[in-house]
Image (tube, rainbow, N blue to C red):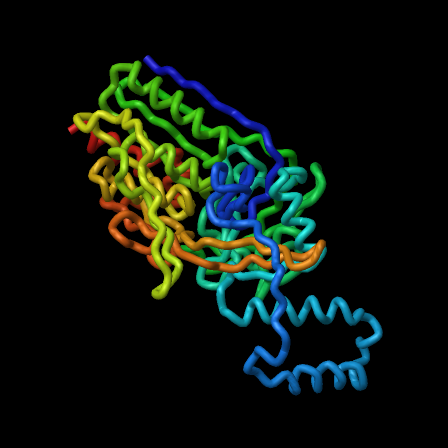
Amino acid sequence: MKIKQNYKMSFNILASLILLLGVFSFGIYVGYTKRPESDKILSVSHKESSSEINADFEPFWKVWNTLNEKSIYANEISNQDRVWGATEGLASSLGDPYTIFLAPEENKTFTEEIKGSFQGIGAEIGMKDKILTVIAPLKNTPAWNAGLKAGDKIVKIDDVSTNDMTVEKAISLIRGEKGTTVILTIFRNGDNKTREISITRDQIEVPALETELRDDGIFVISFYTFSEQSVNFFRDALIEFIGSGSTKLIIDLRGNPGGYLDAAINIASWFVDQGKIIVSENFGDNSKQKDYRSYGPKLWDNSHSLIVLVDGGSASASEILAGALREHGVATLVGEKTFGKGSVQELIKITEDTSLKVTVANWLTPNGTSISLQGLEPDIKVEYTEKDYKNDRDPQLEKAVEILLK
């Protein structure tokens, strides 16, 4: 007997930094009671004077004046646009792909993403080893249906090279009106050359999660994104699992790019004893670490068995949940190494129409593992190859079932 139930929510999306319904990748702080995963909105009231900065600004002004005198393009760029360009360079000088200055156009795009008021292809993208990379295509979106995969490196967007391109700039090129097409040139691990993928943009409908009671008695929760709504959906799914009489559960986090921090903590709290650490926020050597602990109430029966499926598309809040469940002895991780997105950004308003995203901390698992630096290695590694995909075979799920039925 099979029972399958879909929980769906509609929203417009082309993901950037872990931002799906306020997300991932990478979140906005809208208050401590409804905190997205990694960004905080602040305002700037203090302005440093040049006398407080121990740096020589003479080269900057010499370049500025030389460009005015010599460049044939000097009249094509306003002084204000030069300031934005210089500020973008200042932010990128830290070498952190997630510390970014958002000039007016990019800031507007970012704001629209947060509100979900745009159309796109339905893929979360980010930086991996300084290369623009697909974190995860969302299920049944244009990106998913076109064959885009987690880990694909984006070489070109239409005819524009992504070399040194920011995530925000990439989003502005990929997003667009429903019915229009974008061509991504990607390099996939295992290939010896690039490939082009044509994707028609659309309004995106993504399921929060799906549940299934298999014929073998194993209950599966396929979990696609961490939003405010998905907490209630997951609670209902967990109650459904308990009511089914099954004692064997699989939580599938593959391709889940993350989302709200509170969602990860709430869900983990139903599996972990109240007061135990779910995740920690590390602000550096000289700052005190902030621990986020299980709220309870614990619904999980420790006599039951749990497998969590992960892969390179499992990022951010997915890594927080998977790490907490494993390190508290609740779950075994099966699949492939996770993406490794565990940094915390604050979004700081610079002017009325510009912002700065700056990395201020890293997420640590309960045992102190840096998610951002290492990602999570599965307990049992199982690859999912291109051949498996074409043959409609899922060796990772098969392995999880094999373990649970022993």
